[in-house]
Length: 403
Image (cartoon, rainbow, N blue to C red):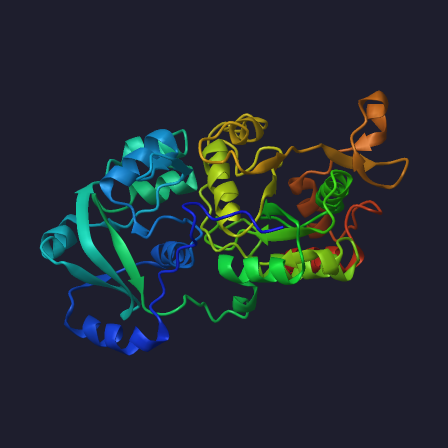
């Protein structure tokens, strides 16, 4: 059984071939330059490897408007591909005036050219409208609203030639498998179904229960060898989230603890920045995994959500992410695996799917409660998390106390 095809039918690869790299690098010497941020670099990484296929660069105005208003972009053949999150590059008014007549621009990070922007199109950055449509509120206490409102007054779109694969030299690059590399690994393992699980927190046994139960369901449907893509988000996150290196160490420990089967699990980093955009963002998370070869997607409760900066109440209905994915344009090919609520079963002393007939036997352990255990040097109830995996979490929060 062949893997699901990428959006647009072909996986985009914007990295300049080795045979042309010296020539393109030499060209940048004479090009006007635009310095970019590490956040921009992460989006270039996303675009370069085809996570946003069939996009071939930063969005021009037409694509930006379609993404913002429809969460999808119409293709030349009339079909739609999902693209709920605008992928853009902002510029100041001064840079726009300096670069507006340039047919090619060298994009530089810390002074080093990383990509060439081709035939750039400049247009006004309607920041408040953008955050209202993408995030659902305009309060600058939301980290993405704060970021976008501080951006330049213009956006510039255009196709990209990326001069070399994007790497970070942080000891985690071996986890950053491209969609093409993931597809090759799924093929090597003989996957006849690929189910993806997105997260930005440590994995507890409730998560693992959901992942293992999904494999059971798929095998009951007749699939011979379903493969799990455990795919934590690895781009920018807010400061109080658990750092990526800690999360990756914890995920490895989950496999060492035998909570997930290493033979049927691939752990890799999804290099996207986080938007904290609820049902709008979860479409992006799902769409990108199609391009990586996943045909099933596990969606959790309140995916990509967070609390309101003033009221501390959830910004999004916790079940809207699941409902939106089931009807989102361009995601019809993806089978959505709905969240089943898992809690700690005090009788069985393990994480189990919640049984309302004996609700008093279940204990909900929130992320906040988990952090409280770790900060206080306490262990969670037996069966909440594997021993090695919990030790990674405990050591991290202990280091914060020492600091």
